[in-house]
Length: 209
Image (cartoon, rainbow, N blue to C red; front, side):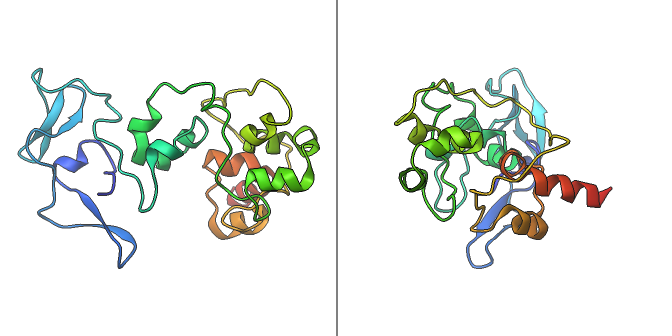
């Protein structure tokens, strides 16, 4: 299953992942069953999302279970930073809505840095890189914490691109440096791209004006 565009859309249209075409598709007869929650005190009835006091109490923006992408796990991948990504949140809202622990606020990112996992990267460049580059400290919080002790700052709910900023040269997204990734994909509305590709995103946004 793929997440619906809106919580009430699933009452009249549902999407399923087609592994052959690697995309979400829908059929005219695909829709949620009668009585499926579509919001707080709401459920699907005859193709519509209807309010009813008999319906279950659920979060309005997360009435359905996690629907992780193929070969992914919402429970394992959900972190305070990752859950700021609206696309990730839509798929993993149940895991994102849990009460995060202090450990959750200090986990290593799964994205490779220069083709290396966080522990490999810090082993190569030593723990001094955690002090030298605050982006690495945030990106590899758990690995940095093994060597140096500091109190990680929980990420803010929203992030805007600063006026003057630079790309994190240590980071590769999908194996691409920031300049190449942003030029090819954009996606500067995603918090993790904003954070590590600030300079490229600023140039990208200037071009769109």
